[in-house]
Length: 123
Image 1: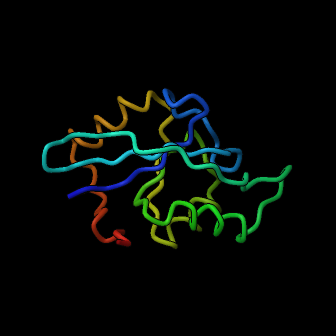
Image 2 (image 1 turned 180 degrees about the horizontal axis):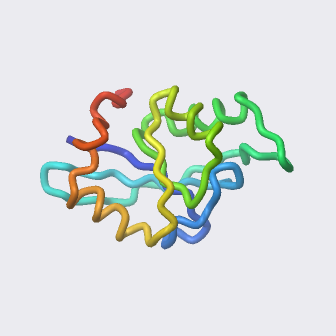
């Protein structure tokens, strides 16, 4: 089975962006059968947080851009934003570490089984 993950990163190396400040998400596809991963593309979004304010519309715009993604990796995310994304089928992980290390751990530890990613599949 294949899953897509959106990574909030400025450099494509480290998960270093707060969800609300991210203007780009790197998309990786994880293959659970052969435990491989590959980078697919980067997608630009409008920041969810404008100053200290955000709206559900800004979250919805990001969700639309990431509509084929099952999980999101961020350095930090507020509880309200996390709850909103999860209520709309997105799994959220705060993991401010090297992208490759986190993706490897997801595959090695079969996180998709533990967190029931299949129930979050949209496509």
